[in-house]
Image 1 (cartoon, rainbow, N blue to C red):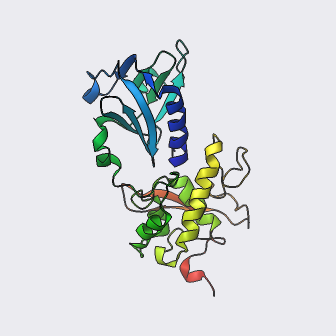
Image 2 (image 1 turned 90 degrees about the vertical axis):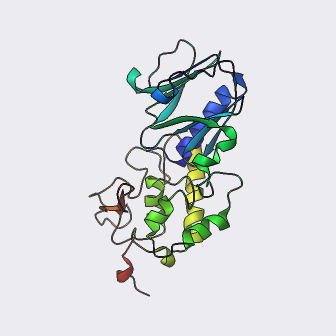
Length: 266
């Protein structure tokens, strides 16, 4: 599932390919934008905010997209075969003379005035991948609800932007935090700093790795390893849903390495 690092890498590729170039064709394949034509305008820049992608076009227009579970943007040279999925999954096509950007399975695709971007990203907490990341604000946001579980708090983009299920699960394991541990019992500075380090480290990779071993089957400590032995203590990895629908997510943890609060000893 796309998380902050995935969106950041997509943003970088799209900006390098399209930024500063005129759009010679635009094709929006969603009903609300079916008659929209941005050809002749210049793609000024592509920026990421958490899991949101903002394509700023001349004339004060922004193309806003969000990947959610399986959306993506792909880049192709003119005449190159598109390989991101079947044609019916294409939601947008943006062409310059050198590149074609194709958006697949985008659950969120809309146009808005660039000056109104805060209506879609203004609720987000500090972006973990921003050079100006506000660490103190992120910690303060988490502290605002001390009885909330650390799993839910880390995943809430209003607290800090960019963490998805992979990162919150692996951060909890690496810090020995049970998923249901309340925020008040957590070293939030350590949790925020580790989250940022992991996200930044994976900007160089095409995959998400928390173990330091970038090989299939060895990239994660507990994420998507339910029923398998813990890499540290060999205890069977547990799994359960955490949070309230529709925002509940599956969590993974080691019962020994991440003991419940009532089983900890001083």
